[in-house]
Length: 253
Image 1 (cartoon, one colour):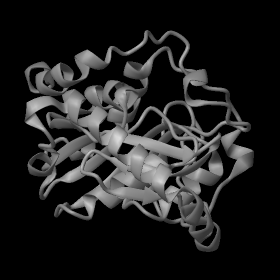
Image 2 (cartoon, helix red, strand yellow):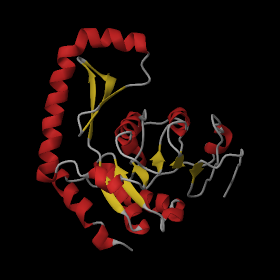
Image 3 (cartoon, rainbow, N blue to C red):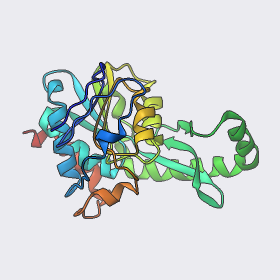
Image 4 (tube, helix red, strand yellow):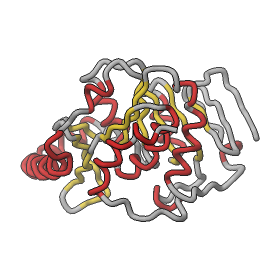
């Protein structure tokens, strides 16, 4: 196990490679010593839970950012004896170009613009796609409301005055974490702690600056896609997500 300390332990990696990184520091020579694959998202969640055990006896909640994030966050919540909530988000891309993500809409209707696009470029895109964007927002809000059902958005009460662990199964560009931080601006919380199994170095570095604490497990040399790093993961049934959120407390370990 290798450890490199640059003086600020706010970014922590685990498993068989640990790197503690200061603000703005990325250490490629250490990051690339191993190639890591997870058997499934439960394994990644358990590894992250090991890094987060200091929050076991503090007011803490887990906010998952996707169905895959629920599988990761479920293990963290069980180990830390805390609640698990889901922040539904939908990425909206420019018409005709799925690779150009304009921003992310969350279940409360808040739209977070892609911070990787300059203000000038975004203004141009908005002029050209305003009607399309509003139609996409309405469509995605309807889908998210249908999935959440009659309970609606009950996250706020669970997150209030807690350390919020933002759980995801991985990041490609970090837009979902941006959306989560935007969402948390509407609720008082103690700390925002990102728990990320895998992601590109430049994204991990950027996210480090917007959360209070960031835990990651693996930074690959050439990031491919999140699902690539999970070798045996069955498809997550969307209809089971709400049940999994509500059953976490009964399965505390």
